Length: 373
Image 1 (cartoon, helix red, strand yellow):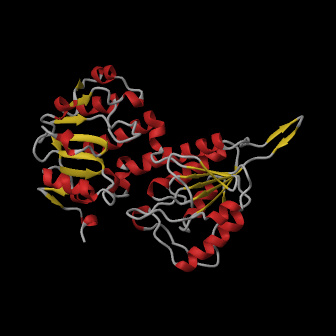
Image 2 (cartoon, rainbow, N blue to C red):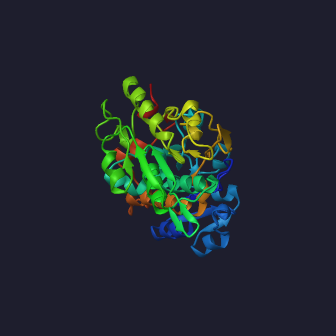
Image 3 (tube, rainbow, N blue to C red):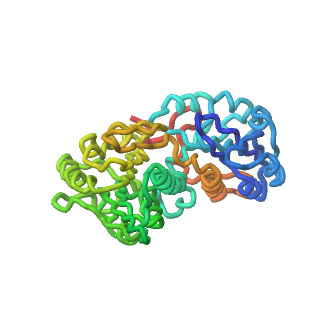
């Protein structure tokens, strides 16, 4: 059983799909691990560290040759898989809804594509959930980046020269990223409030010491949406939420937006008129900018200024913390494959619940139910 790890080639991608820690763990299961030279450099992992962990280090062609499983952060181009065994597994993030042609090409190439972002959000798969591990870091980084762009201090400071008031931070969307954003802003000393369409998040917001801001006149979602995500709301709720946000956002110094709906464009949460109501010098960080953005006028990887408010957002936020993001992502992959490791077969054997959920292609066809129809 050979596991191959290739250098990420997507623009701006600094993460790597295996670390020396996970390479050593795979070797303990009886697998051989081959890593492309330089694959971990941007995540502060030298080639020698992989060699010390027992992995082979070489060129892309040698690494892929006879591979049974290829690990990636972003699914590699088919040309890089040349030489891998027929039917080889590729475990990576495929962005299946927006990159359907890539999925089709994997089917035609005879590879078994395993989309890590399709991991079901069930208890036994929590340690395999790459979206959660990466969103957690993204929520942290969003606040740090916003604090850096903000021209004032976050905590209240009482000095002989006078008092500096604490920054007011508003987090919109209380999933994994939003919760970490709340926690980070609180640790920095800000006054934090947050909102979400899911009523059940009220207690989570309060548990972190933040103020919940909710529409009271129209019912939101009770509990979680499908797969732990929010779903689209009625027009009545959207209008009520817009009015609530408009009255609240004008008083904020920092706004962090995190709302995403899988397979769809990011919902618009902040309009140009709402931006105009904010104080000059305020900052908005749009964590959903890569999927169209929650904020009107946000542009990925650029600082745009509207009405004196800075609007920022990264197309790939987690990669700005490449070392930690790689460590968590690689553990997700190891936890996934090791959970199904069959000692007699010397390889993982997936079950139906998780295997069918993440599998996109098999036997030359697209088999994912989420991509059919």
